[in-house]
Length: 297
Picture 1 (cartoon, rainbow, N blue to C red):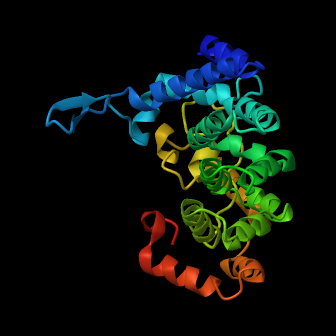
Picture 2 (cartoon, helix red, strand yellow):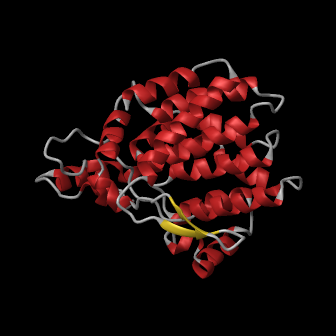
Picture 3 (cartoon, helix red, strand yellow):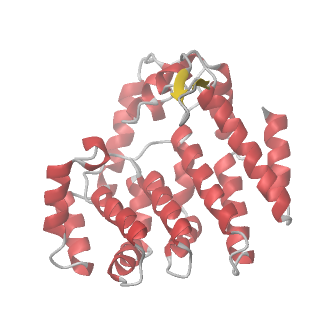
């Protein structure tokens, strides 16, 4: 896996758009290999002509615990040298600086999509967005100067980067991220698709927060890292098992981070500062329509 990542990173660090595109494809291929190949049975698909075909088997998160490739991937992401999210952010920054004329818009969207995938597969990488430079990069991409496709992809990336990570949420707020989101929401020239994503983001913002996910610790007994055991994500079930003392350490870590979370009422006041009279309707919709399958309400 190191050799595959080395080739991808070499292309991502290039100043050639074609090589960057190749590097993004290589990363996408690696993630697809982890997510698609597995014990799950192939799914049948029916074409418009009525022909049936089998799509590649797609793993569920519970399958990943028995996958050596995923274990190796997760272990490599813990180090600086092979962390994919960090490389993608460096590439994204270069594309934004060089792509003022829109020539790299598609590559920017592709990079954002891959960042989402990497953060979902390796939640500890979210710590990158506790740094203002990386959070500012996303906030810059939400600005009206960018095309709707980039704005939508960025809003989704923000949700993934902030999910279960209150310290990132506080950085987002300190950098006036909520002002950026609400200003775009009120802008009459904002496209309908972008406004839909912004509404989803506000739903997400107004949900209760959970303590931050700590960095995964190295384990030699095959048990789940403390990170995954405290995570509300289904990834917590991937590794299975619980070693003595882990729950206690995880609880101590959670208690120390409790001050980083904000209540729904406090966040409601923040939103009401920029969107007066809208918050109550958003909370009502959150209770009534259960967006995101109801998992956030």
